[in-house]
Amino acid sequence: MEGFSVTISEAACLGVSLALSGFSFYLYKKSRTTIDKLNNAPRLTIDKKLKDILKVTPGACLRYVVIEGGVKPAGKPLISWYNKENVGVLRRFMVKEHRLLWNGFLRTWTDNERLLHENIEAVPFLLVGLDNTEIRVLSPLQAAGLDMEVTYEKFHQISHSLGDLMGQYFTGEKPKGQLEIEEMLKVGTNLTGVGELNLDTDGTLSLRPPSNGSQYFLTPADFDTLQGENEDIAFWWKVLAITSALAGAAIIFWAGLRYYRHLKALREQEWERREFNRLQNNVPDQDNLQDVAMCVICLSQPRNCVLLDCGHVCCCHTCYQALPQQYCPICRQRIVRVLPLYQV
Image 1 (spheres, helix red, strand yellow):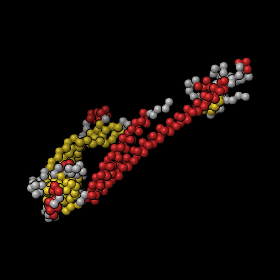
Image 2 (cartoon, rainbow, N blue to C red):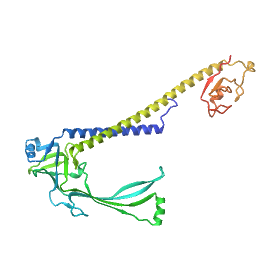
Image 3 (cartoon, helix red, strand yellow):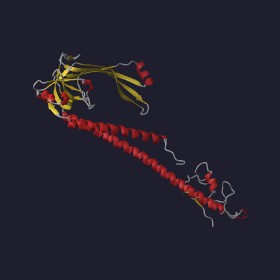
Image 4 (cartoon, rainbow, N blue to C red):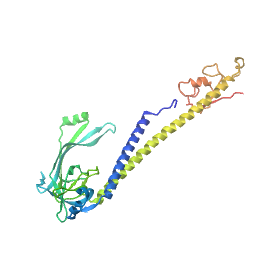
């Protein structure tokens, strides 16, 4: 590809689009695998029949099941720091800083949030069925979808002095305040659990992260909602993968179109070179040049090319090739193409 090269921006955009497409496709396939496993997972009711089912199951284990039950602490529950009536088994306390950051590209202030502090507490808890059958929940913090109820939220606004306000324009940062949030998984909350169900040697039932690497779920939503959320996630990963692939294809098409135009220009230049060489070989002797219009640049060769689009015939092909810029020497209009002038 003599004289042709892919630009840095084209190569960078192509690399990013292909990488994003591959990454999105990987996450889409992973999401589809999770959805397929959810669709194939048996939905079991928490009752006394569970132990009988597990006793006749090899290894006393069901690799991937769906169960629903109410939250019950296995021992002493956690109590909210701000409302003693809120009792739960998981508590998360966070402090977030809200601020404005100067965006030099957009030339405006944009909202920004960062986590300053996070504390998570947990106590062992169970999922209880209608007949009071209990299933111990293991490693709940490893589960996806565990949304907890906000039990406390307060924003502490920061007051600024005049010096602080002036300094903010130099640092590009305007602190707005701090937000304190307490979230709890409260006792009595109905949870949908998807994971590995085991019958332990002491006769207790336990739900834990699947040993085969499948996604572990604990969510207050019902199973149909959980399926719908995962379908949406897979759909958007698919859209992103297709969009990124189309963007990469568009970049390849654009580079190919440029290469085609480059080859076309090379062919035209080669044709021009051959034509002008043929004309140069047919130049009349010096004694017969007195009636021929001479090149306005070198004044020694006959005018043998037509400059387009202006149409001026003012120079020879050798001088045309030596022009520092592709502008007509007469009218300074840009030269689009050049044609040989055949003199009879």
